[in-house]
Length: 266
Image (cartoon, rainbow, N blue to C red; front, top):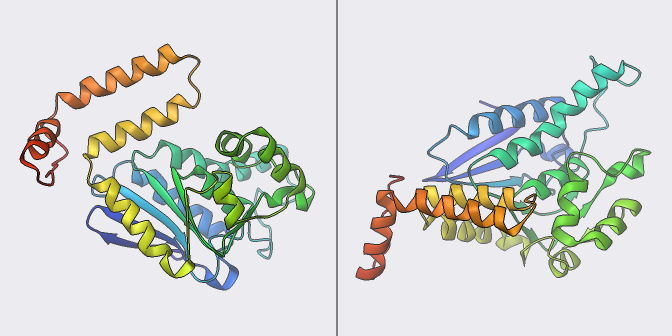
């Protein structure tokens, strides 16, 4: 299906691998197009309940492929309108990731720079191998560091001061500091990264499909909620919706009978 992506399914877990290892999975025009296509379709993929995003080879994603010759409407020197259209094809990726109903786990090793950093930040959970190094590379190229949603996600994850330091300098943050400041939730040896991502995904998959979707939606909307009352109203709505389903009744019976629940997304 794809030239630059590989998909692997393990039941309701899907692994999405950026597969340009010779270029550290840099974001070529084809990679961006195929990522957009995948995430557009993900909303309708009821078989995928959790997604793990990772990179092949030595890195997660080195950002925009600067070796690819610019061409077409988005080329340097084109019109403002053409440039905005080209920019949106990339920035739309993080919007699609946040709209996806499935939890997304980013398993980061090696470099996650620029657009690769943005992809990691747009995931719901980030775990890192000990080789992980991340930075907002845009400012090192003469651009603003605030690109592809980074200035939205980063301060919400690590706070304003650390975000400002990383964005204003373009400096790398290594895996150990990323764990300390909460940028990643878990740090493991590179050799254990796949197993750690799988175990985390399986912990999520123990829960009902509707519960996962509603929880991701509520977390996302709570980031921008204007008040506690607004968040509580959304939580109340979600709980009543979920309580009317057969999966809730199955969850209660499984708890009482001390057995794993068998959820059917019903």
